[in-house]
Amino acid sequence: MDLVWHWLTYAFLIALMVAAAMVIPRCQRVRPGDDYRDIDNLDPTESISLDTTVRVHGYERGDAVCYQLGEDEPLDRLFGWVAARPGDEVAIVGGTLIVNGEAATRGANLGMPAAGPIRVPADHLFIISDGHRYDSTAHGPIPGRALRGRVAELP
Amino acid sequence: MIAQVMAEKFGERNAGFVMLGFAAVVLLIAVVVGWGAITRWRAASALADWNARSLSNEHAAAREAGAEAAALAPSSAAAILAAADLASSDGYARLEASAGRVRPGDRALVDAALALSQAIRGKDITNTVAGPDEELLRAILHAERGEDTAPIASTEPATGAIARAAASRLARAAWRRGELQPILRAFGTLVLTDPSHKDAQRVRLVLAALDPQYPPAQFQAHANRLAAEAGDLLRACQRLAPERAAAIAVAVPATQRTPEDLRRLLLTSDQPIEKVVEEARRSHDPATNEAIAWRALDAGRPDLAKALAAAAPEASRKDLEKAIAAARGDLAALAELAPERTDLQPVVSHPIAGDGVITFHLATRSGLVPTDAPIVVLDGSPADVRRWDSLVSVPTSGAGFTAAEVRLGGRVLWSGNVAPSGAAP
Image 1: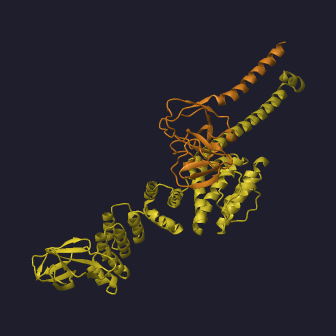
Image 2: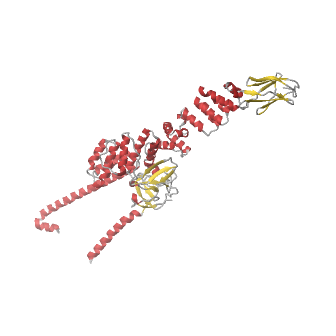
Image 3: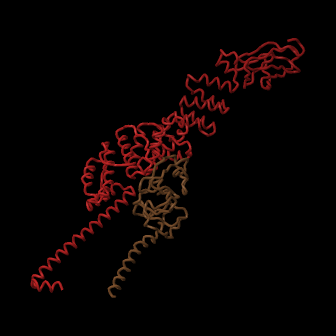
């Protein structure tokens, strides 16, 4: 009987550890840097829920995303929306960002000269923000290794 | 318990030696495992550093971090690729030597890197690469060899590093070829694929110059940012798209404008015509003076055109002066400039004396009326002249025949006696 209790205890502990390993990455939070101004109305004092389990192909167009382009603030936590996924066709026509023939859902007005189309490379996302300082219009398609995770919502 | 069994079997001392040996082996294994763990941790840390450095475009620091990672984890594909120098044949040889150590699952990545290295060095591609990467690598190879490159037809996503390498090389090849559509295609791809490329500002300026929908103020701002380089680039754009030449001339920095740029700029300028004429006069360029003189004429300002005509080219000056004279109604000048044109010679109808006035018409046969009033001399004295279009009226007090003379621009057009009212002419 004791042996059974021992095995049950071990099984419970292992299950607890597995559950923690699965849940904890989904329950992380990230706070924007104090000087980060690339998303309109983003409150730098409030942290945002971050799901770090999502991989490149798990993102949908319009998803809010946290990524990094360096180790120091503000490059270590940047925010934006997924405008295009790997294989999507991206172009700028009349100053508007066009994805697969349609205007992007967020930040479509870029005020840039006509360019493209290009196809977003494998394992990359085309990310757009309001200020366009650190998004794909300034740095190109963002590689999967730069993604920190999907954030619940951006203003 | 083990010690007891061993002691019974081998004796206390021997058991101690065996256990010591066992402990040494365990310790050795622990050291090896521990050292392996530390090495892996350092390699992972170096790779993370490479990732951060390469994302922030610190290429030299990224290369160092990659080399450290490769030294610590020589069989890791990520570390090997992070350290690879694809632009040199030495780098290719090192990568090829490392390729055999990577896991079979990662071999395709290393093969793609090897093929990219061959393509950017203009060497035949001997490594196996499939799909859109192969198409891009062939295009890179053609570009490096100065051969024609066809547009990329694949609808599948390529590898990021290969897409970036292709974008910059195809843009450079297109610029060398100097054809509008390939330049638009390649520059547009570069600016979206690698916007932080060292030539991205220049590429954006070219795209802005060639995009008719791009707002002129923003185009001008682009050109101002590039300052000294903008002039040459914009002149190249004018050659690529002559129909945009006037719009592009606006953005050429003032210190780099050629007389042709200034002429285009002034011809399309929305400044008041007086300012445009003033700038044209300051240019001391005959062709600009002529062009702006014609613009002033179109704007109904022959007076401003006349100020520029004197500095117009000799060959076209006479035509310009005739047009100015015609616009001003300066029949005297017109007659002087075109003596062979009888239709432009001013003609006076026979003056008729009325009730205290002498009247006549003054015009050319083609219907032009002089702007300047004629000088009418009655009985040796200049008389007051009133005009309604071509009709000229001169008050007279004399009741008998009056000696009259009509002059225009120093020429006598008519002279004779005017019969009093009621007398036969």
